[in-house]
Structure formats: structure tokens, C-alpha cells
Amino acid sequence: MKRMSKKEQQGWGRWVVFAVVIVVLAVLCTIGVSMMKHNAPRSGVTSVQSDTTFVVGLTDHPSSLDIRTNTQSSVEQALLANVYETLTRRDNNNALVPGLAKEWEVSGDGLKYTFKLNDNMRFATGRDLNSSDVVWSLQQIITNHWQGADALSCIKSVDNPDELTVVVTLNEPNAGLLRSLSGRAGIVYNSAQTDIDYAVSASGSGPFVVESYTNNTIVLMRNSRYWSRPAQASQITLRYFDNETALVDAVSNDEVNMALPTRASSIEEAANNPTFNVTTGVSAQQIIVGFNNQSKSILSDEQVRKAARYAIDTAAIAQTMPDAYSALGGPIGPLEPGYQDLTGLFPHDPAKSRQMLGFFNAGYVGTVDFLVPPRYQELGTMITQQLQEGGWSVNMEVLDVGLLQSRVDEGDYDMALMQLTGQYTYRQFANADSVFHYTNKQAQDEYAAAMHSVDMKTLNEHLSAFARTVSEDAASAWLYTRKDFVISKARLSGYPTNMTATYLPLADLRR
Image 1: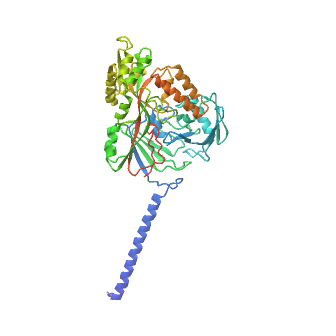
Image 2: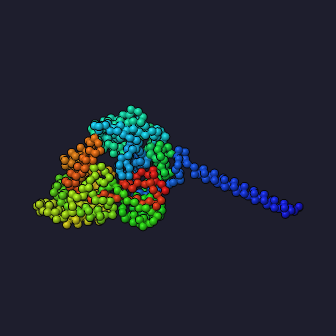
């Protein structure tokens, strides 16, 4: 066999190197094309990374996704503004902003609301969303008594003169209608989608669709057909834990990107970890000592109620409780229309409480039954001691939440430590059939005037007057507005901080 010369060997070597380079380049090109295909945005989604996924930890799992009938606030928290959209919306400070309606006009007499809808809206199915769907949805909510129907009882008629205009005519003025339409009363459903099982699925016009629903998760996927700016996240898993301890463990073990604990003690470890941000905001939750105003309870006596309020040190409680955002002196919270600071009406004065109780014959007041949930047993003990210092005899009963609620519903209590959740909880003090059984003609007249206001300024004035009357009459003892807590990985942004227990829009969540 002929041996290659040195020159021939060098030439052959150069060809081998060249061939190897060609092969390597071909492999790199193939990998590059594959990666480009993998990372390419899905059809209909622009300028958003499709691999942005998040896990949000929660504890209050909705028993059903049927936002039409499920009364739990957790179903609103999960679906409102994420899957379902409303005519008007609320921002992080609870101010009204445009929703499906880009603008609206109210007649001078407050009886006609004209809404102009956004152009080119569509449902997640791809079907166009127009004024006919708005009319149909309002009619269905009212006719079927879905959640939010009470807020629409003032409606006389609903018309749609064209595809982008809705005219709502009222029987009487109701300046609160616009705010009601930012909640379940304002959801626009797909009138053409009749085959959906709302209990386990959901379909709206929002930036997300429900991919799956199990006993501990709700998976939200980006709606690729969304009519407005696409969601930043391609997928958000709402993961529900059995208790607060399990939720905190998940945060520590990096199982979630973001968590919404309900107890102040749950944020302590995360607060000392530089990889987490801990944010506190204003909640839509109030802690109060509810009074039973029924005639069978001693709290039906105005002087007795006022004595209780002087005995309870609201300021000290708000400073002591780690979940307290601010002291509360009346039925309207700081983010609600008509709010005013009423904490000065009953300054802590145990001597005055004893003096007021001294007007009654011995044994008239007797021993009051004070119901307390286990979670707030320490606070209940503090309040009991304050009442005793004010001359009261108190029987504090610590009951599980279910039994406590049953006793309250049956009117079998004098005082109860309660957490009120959601907007409009003040309405309970305008309704004699509520668990407080409170009646006051002046307060009820002021509330009615507020509800029949023709504009927001008048509404706020009447609500403020209503709240002052109810508080001055000591219908209950309001303690504080709770904080909302959010724990997130340090790089996360775009999430809400206020009212998160009831309203959690996540379209802007991003790294």
C-alpha cells in the first residue's frame, strides 16, 4: 500500500478539520432552530414571554367555581378580573375605573346610565362580546337571583341601541350602581355558551382561562384570544393549603412564588429572609364586637351598648394586634365611600362605663355571653378584662367558627367577636333582619337617602351621616380594619396589595 507523503498527510488533515467544523456548525444550527421554535410566542400572544409561570399559595379553597351562586369570597378572589370581567372595575385603592365599559354618562336626575363599551372585545371562546351580552347578563342575574342581584333591584329596563352602547334606566336614583357593577352584579357572561358546567369550569372574557380545577388547585392559563393587553404570566397555579402552617412551609421550601397568609405570625420568617418581599395592605375585613340588639338581649338598651363601648379600649387593641391596619370607629372602612374617622366618639373610659351601668338596678344587666373564635381567643381575653374593669360581668365562650356562626345566626348571644369580610358590610346595620337586629329610623333613613343619591358626592355625604348615627348609637363596637399580607419572591412585581382576600387581579404579575 502506497504511503502518503508528508504534504499529502497535511492536506488530508486540513480536510478532516474542515469536515468536523461543518458538522459542529450544522448541529449548532439545528439546536438553535429548535430553541427558537420552543420559545416562539403562541399565536395571538405578543411581547410576552410564554414560559412565565407562577404558583400562588392560598388557604381558602372555593367549594365551587360557580361565581353566579357560590357565596364564598374565595371564588371572587380567584376569578374576578382574572377570568370574568365587569362593566366597571376597581383599582388597588378601591377607586372606580373603566372595565368592559370604557366610559359612562349619568343623567342629571340619576335615572339613566349610558355605557360605551370598548371596541373589538371577545370572549375566551373567540366570540365577539357586545352590548347584547351585557343586556342578557343583567337580565339573567336579576331573573335567576344570582349573586349581585340585590344591587340591581333598582333597574327598570336595559336597552342596547347599538353594539357598543348600553342604556340602563332605573326606577329611582342609585349612585351606588356603578360600584356594584364592579362586582358580581357587573359580570358579563357569554350568552352563547350554554354547555358549560359552572361548578367545575369557568369561561369569561378575562386575561386568563381556567385550565383545571381540583380539590387543591385552580390552574389559570393565559387567554390567547384576550381582547386587551395580554397577561404577563403564561400560567398561574392557585394552590390551596389545608392550613396556615402548611402554607408557610411551602414558602420556606420554595414551593410557591407568592403567598397570601391570613395571620400576622405567618410572615415573621419570610420578613427576615432577603429573598422574599413582605407587603402589607388594607383589607376589606373588619374585626368588631358585634352586639345583639334584639329585645331579649341586654344590648338592646342604648345606654348599656354605650357603656360597653367606653369600656373597650379600641386604640390599645389596634396598637396591640399584629394584623391591625388601623383602629376603626364605625361601620365603613377606610377604602369605602363615606368613610370618616369616628374613633374619637367613645374614648376608653372604664370609669364612665361603670357610672353608666350604675344607673340600672342591681342585676339588671346581669352576665353577658361573649362568643369568641379560637383564632382570636387572646383578643377575646383582653376585651373581657377591659369589660370587667368597666363594671361588666362577662361569660366568655370560645367556640369553633361553625358553632359560633350558628349561635349568632340564631340570635343566641349578647356579644360576639366577629370578622366581617367584603364591601358593603355596613349594610347589615341598615337591615333589621341581619344578625345584629339593629333598628334606628334615623340611620335607616340616612342609608335610604344614600342609596337614592343622584351622584357620588351626595352618596358619600349620606353614607357618612349614616355611619356616624350608627356609631353614636353604639350598634356594635368596631375595633380595627385588618391588614392584608402578601409574601412574594423578591423579583416579583405587578401584584395587588389591598383587598387581596377578596379581589386578586393577577394579569400584571411578572418577574
